[in-house]
Image (cartoon, rainbow, N blue to C red; front, side, top):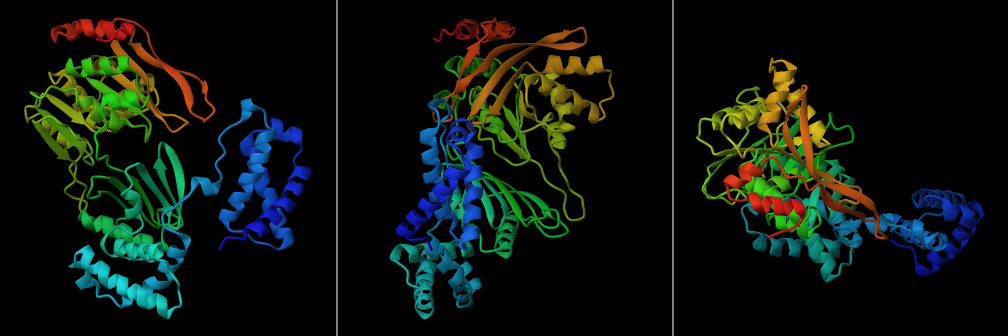
Length: 517
């Protein structure tokens, strides 16, 4: 229960005097605000321990917020930043009272429900029975619930029985992009590029483990001590990775990359500030001109989203083969064959890798091959395909810059047993890949394309590149959002002749100069 406002005011009055003695006005003005907040939290903890008092996390967050506001008023404007306390960052999926009632009533309710019969009922039918049982159990245990709280308890029970438990609440939110579960009591989700903690996520480890097992079973996989890791896909296409004890030391861990219902376009990326209008036009022309494109970036930087957006520029007349570990690409063209890898069975047999699928795709008369991610031996077949008439192919690579992307491709070729001199390896990469598009998730949570880099050839055993566009950081605004601009180098790209072949050369030149048709 939260503390009464009058009691909070009294505690605040006492604590602020301690804070003022422990942290000087000058220190508050000049110190890093994050460090100041940590000091204040430490002082609050020490005071509570000394006075023999306790406060809920919510109440502590309220006091910290008030104290930080006082110190922000002392700090110079140039050092003001948006302060988010734990309670502001967190978002309850349900009311605290509803959660406590759900935990208290759950065992009794489940004992009175025939789970086999319930699994065959429609949600609306089952909801009526659960409502009646919830009302009876709450009355028997003298738990008083409002209509809203009762509805939340019933929804939690139904989600547990028919769906994925507390995950259902987050999965239904279209603004949530990722869900990261470290253990039953430590869960986060990402919205607008920022991670936020979830309060009241799971009852206990057993509850979380049951949800993990259900996810695996739904795709005919198993998750147990013999198979403690699994990659799966939810019904909506969201990508899931599960790892359990003993590999996950603190309990079951689940990572979910949500599937976007609405496909992101290059125009959407311009509107969100991820690329400029000139970059959109150049990327569109590059795709239409059948340039081989590698999208480079770190984990969660938006590589697949950009690949999806870029693929929408491909002509409808072309035959496309997509190859992925977990199908996420949503190509709009009519002539698409989607291939997905298969893991080994319990006996360690039957695995079909990306490399197997790339080799098979070459026999399927593709105009373009699009691989969701190159991270191993498949790079050999991908490079060979790009060099042997499959222009316009695309893929993604984990790396942090265009130059590192080239190095990673060379390393993957070498580690895959591609026994050729370094000079030959670099030449194959240089003549296969035309463009590297570097995307980054920046510290304000926003994803931006930082480089569009063209590969122009090999000179003195080095791959020669030239930047067409770069993102230049200029500072941070008052809301903590990065300020910067997308700058064209105004260089005429080498692929202008290819663009001329598709009657797009003049548009490419104008786009590089910032003049859009």
